[in-house]
View 1 (tube, rainbow, N blue to C red):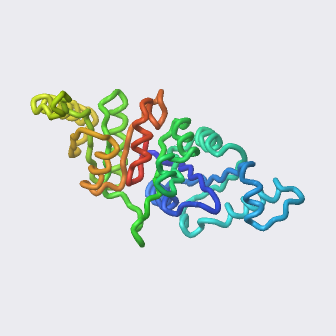
View 2: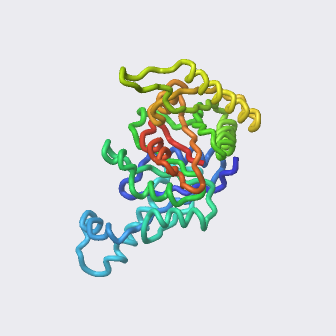
Length: 289
């Protein structure tokens, strides 16, 4: 699995160590270079200058840039020890600069947090992460920043792959299989169908024949897909809320990573918003390929 360059955007002083450690794990395993990117924005100048104790005199731009360069040069050395790291400081809109840098540097992966602090912000996903997911062509690894078990080092022992059974599914399963094989992890495929309930005046009930028909069709399609890709992964088929059931499947399989596909025409968030919901609600890191 090609992963020569990993783009890791960081935000000082709020760099999330959890996502940094995930990027470090990948870089060490795949012998990748990490491009550590910090973007200075004009909107943060007044707040930043007051928090850092500078007076609002002199060249404000120069002071902020100098301070950002110092933080970038001095931070995260222990977390990224032994990894080839290039530190890049840019100015402008963070989302645009991240997506543009990924294209210019021909990176294989963007690793970033969703800046999700608290329920409200996890719900909103984070404007920077959302824009990057929408505008980027390369795979994007996102993490929701839920609390990590103390002292636990990040690793990948189990990979869960969401299969939509569309024309992009072959690529999704192939990439998930490559990742699982590269880190010697188990692979499970999961497909969430539409509900099999029938609604009427007396309420709703599940039609067992219709449900069996749906499950049978999906099982056959996934079997054909696995034969085509060359995988022999376990399969979970369920029906209902996609994000909720993916979390349940992740818990059942003790998955460390969820791989989802994106429609090239709709970006990593998906044309119908399903990608947005999955990334926003996921309890584990999500790799959108």
